[in-house]
Image (tube, rainbow, N blue to C red; front, side, top):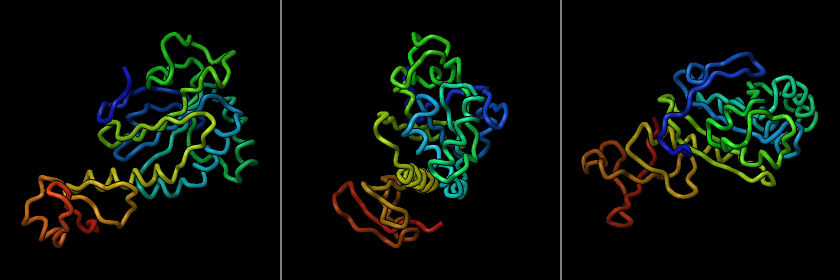
Length: 219
């Protein structure tokens, strides 16, 4: 069954380039971004892994750990790191899961059970559905799922924007509208009373009976 928003993210133990991890324990009390790749030494994934390395400080600021996964062994990942640094100028500074038996890819429904149990002999096209981003919260629930085709590099600025929204809306009874950026107005939830709207948000602008916009909370 496909993972849905608010499902508990499947837990697992796996070898990574930083040693063995137990996923839920590794997440701790912050957020995690699990992003997957069809195969090592592929062009677009090389740019993505380097881009994420260069943005790690921005994820750290949001208490969001980065975890890469490719259905190849850890030894292959370690060799790939050199190419990633050459291509992007960034050294990979987060763990990468080795998934040569396809266990995590199947656990997260990125590959079907019929895919076998080995990455050996599989091409990037065979693994093309292993191109997802999962944002997971401190409660170990899935907050966001995005899946991209192999030919389209991911926009990690959008992942940061989404995390900003997820964290803001988890703390306050608000939602963020289309193309929202941090600091812009938010939509007030139906659970917010008139008194709370005035005291906490300084009032609001009513666009429609069900759409009330207010200044974003600062804390």
